[in-house]
Length: 123
Image (cartoon, rainbow, N blue to C red; front, top):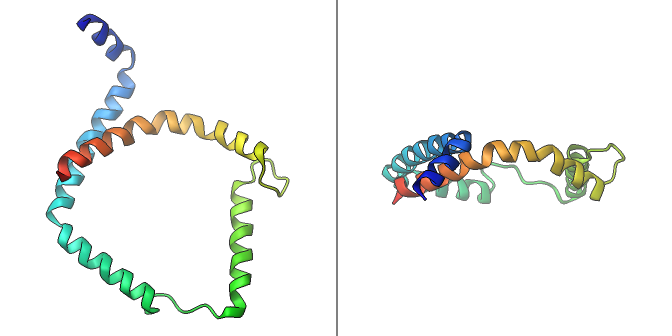
């Protein structure tokens, strides 16, 4: 059984290296965040109050809200329309999925190790 595990680790050593590096980085980040949590919460709370009181963002006049909504929709459609037909549909989703698969295969092991390490460091 031990030899089978060693063989599998050697076979997938790229994934193991990525997950290990992510765990180390995550643990360090979690430990640092644990030590500055109060400060971060004060800053986040202040930012929340500033944004919701209108200090950080100017109020949008009611007449312009539809314009901003249409502009946001156009930006989203242009960014996600993979086949250029101007409509988001299943074809775009399939093209986006095929385009994203290599990225997912490369980055998910790193982020999984990062999350585990972060949780251990923050504990």
